[in-house]
Image 1 (cartoon, helix red, strand yellow):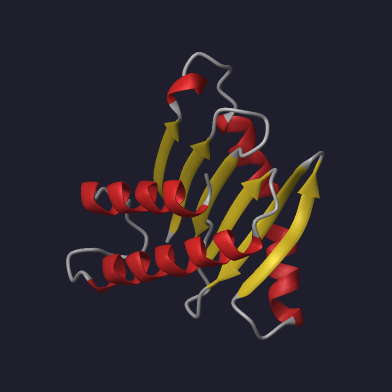
Image 2: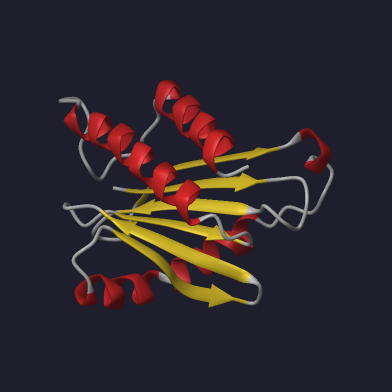
Length: 149
């Protein structure tokens, strides 16, 4: 399943865009949240989605050169880095960020993976359909606040 989650913080430092992309590159979930001081600023979510989508090829190349699920930084765009995590089912978790926080990013990916597996285990959910769970959304947002900001 592919999914888009945009996490934007209040300064140039600490900006995050998180994406889950499944085989077939189908986004199935998208959410944005901002800290209160960022509300009036320019919306860059479409640009961030484009940057992350452009890095998919780098993730696909890197996944064959390692046997770990956490690929760390796989690409760079200007001052922003793209980190990736690939599941056994070939879902690609990607994070566009401008702050290095390897441990926080790894923990974020790991815990979102656990949430993602729970969604996939739901008999009423098929991998190519949108994730519309309010609980999933709230938990991913909480993990973003806990590990990334």
